[in-house]
Length: 267
Image 1 (cartoon, rainbow, N blue to C red):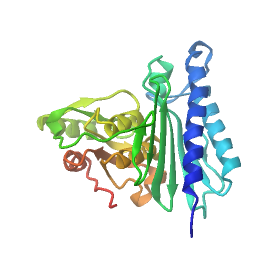
Image 2: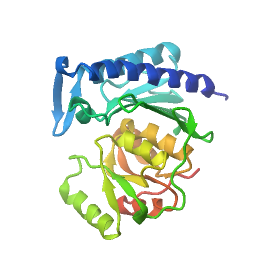
Image 3: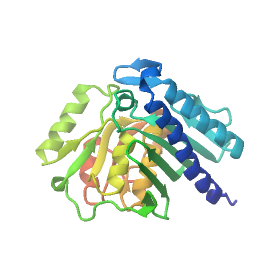
Image 4: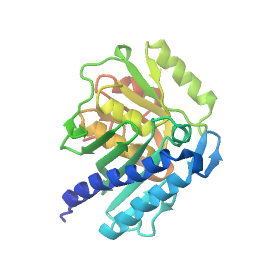
């Protein structure tokens, strides 16, 4: 049965730009925002909620047959039986956002029949929009991007994610193995943006012991479209419960995957 990905691709590219403009308006008025703590190092503001509501409502009107999963508002009622689902983080990197730092983005992914097909990430404070479509390449501000070729773990920086959901006792041995192998880590507070930096060759890869689907699916799509290798994140209920994650240029991926015990996505 055919499925209209073209219209969703075009709509998603416009929507992520619109949502980023809304979020940027809040960013430029941080002093008036209502900010709440959801947990340790886990913040949310009215900017997160209102940006997600804009995205959810636009998608519901354009594609009522599709399901929706957002970090702030959760699952839409139409999840059961839907072939396609939009997965959204309205502001990934809320801590940098509320701290007046540019390392945040709007992230929108579209999954069809259990496969991530489209990824859209806009970082308006950096003036960047990343877009990827499975099998059709990835772009940064309209120009093609690619992962860094023929790289080894010692050739540059690698994004490293951490959440208090895991705990230091699990994370520190991973970090020690990474450093002992000659790696050097980088962290900017937004997993989605670090994934984009892998896709355009700024970082060698990205690894995290546990991450949620809304934080990473768009970035994984963009990396895969840019020639990188990603782990099989959606296996074993990853959409709803999250998973360990590795994504990298092909030469770096096996080492990162070994750190968190994941397998590559089979194309």
